[in-house]
Image 1 (tube, rainbow, N blue to C red):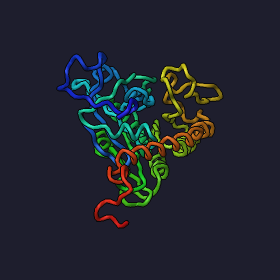
Image 2: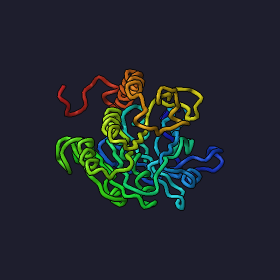
Image 3: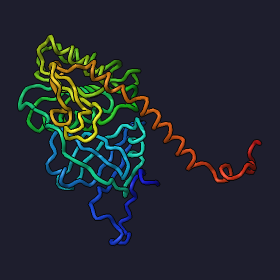
Image 4: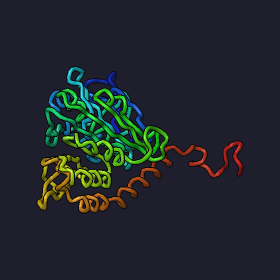
Length: 316
């Protein structure tokens, strides 16, 4: 591939020809849903110190986009971290095409402020779609602290539900699907209303699409239940220098990369966040279409690409 493509790491290559920096080799690849992939890769320093709520900036290769991704899990002894990636644009599609033996050029992190977690009581973790990967480390740490955990996760149908077994190890799991093909039919917010009804929930953590997080915050506001959301604005450097990830919290400008990414859901200006997230969608779509054209050109049969003569057996 060209300069912007993934790095193929050959452990048997001549050591003198290898890059002088340490790359992060991918050890495992697992397809969690039709467009969500889990990559387990070597990152011992990050694995040793990461905390729930923190993220990394992934730079797959020279010329590639810098992508912020939550650290979904880590194994300090093995020196690995797990990244759960939703393939929605060119860069994330390039990333999920990598597999065991491939390597990522550099990973910066852990970045962001760790989640502020209680040590007792009943916490509810609400995950919509790939947001389920963000609540997993939160639920794991809550469980480790002895907090009662109820996780509510959802997807459009059964095949879009992810990480249910991992969350079940932390407490009760309520699964919802839009079409009712698995678990409870309906949205996660409907299940949350039932969980909140007895009045024994002390805190809610919600991660997912902006409309879902906004709905959760409005549901818990009149009940006075502390609600933490994880925001995903456009992010470039991850250190607060570019200002691309600015959000408005209680009327003041904050930066998701250094002040967050988690904030009090009752103070977030969700309308502004949604507007900013939609700003670059036309550019993202154009890049995805160019990628599709490039892949088509690379995979086109030689007989079709180099000759006007139909291949044998073709319907001319």
